[in-house]
Length: 163
Image 1 (cartoon, rainbow, N blue to C red):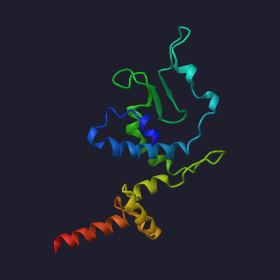
Image 2: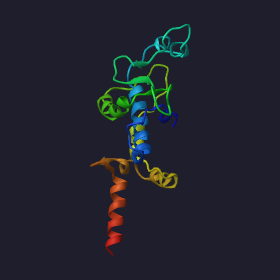
Image 3: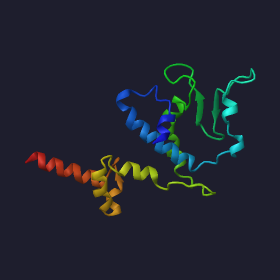
Image 4: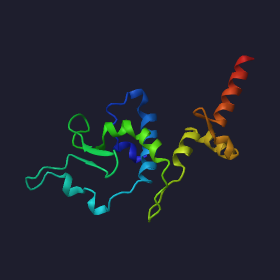
């Protein structure tokens, strides 16, 4: 997912970075599919972020009416890049919880209804994912943080381990 490369993950521990970044990217897409975005001409472009004509380049920009901020990285290996800030990365799961009650925007844009639920209920292994897709939809319902197919697999594993 290209969106992951746009996240400032500098404050996320290495061991959790991939999984956390994946979920943040999915949540961020879900939020952006729901919030009203400014017209394209109001979104900063290349001319706003380049240091030309002696003017100062744009340092940060916040999507209007959100807590989602993109900023220029001041130091480190990604210095000079514009990324969703580490603060935004931390807030996105909570922001998604608030935004998920809002309807998807439908005007001339594609959106992925239920993408977050699909992400949480589908295994990362493509072979297993194919099997899970064959199960009835209710097997992907979530209870106490896991889907029914995950609880079933856990129960089966425990039973086999106890024998």
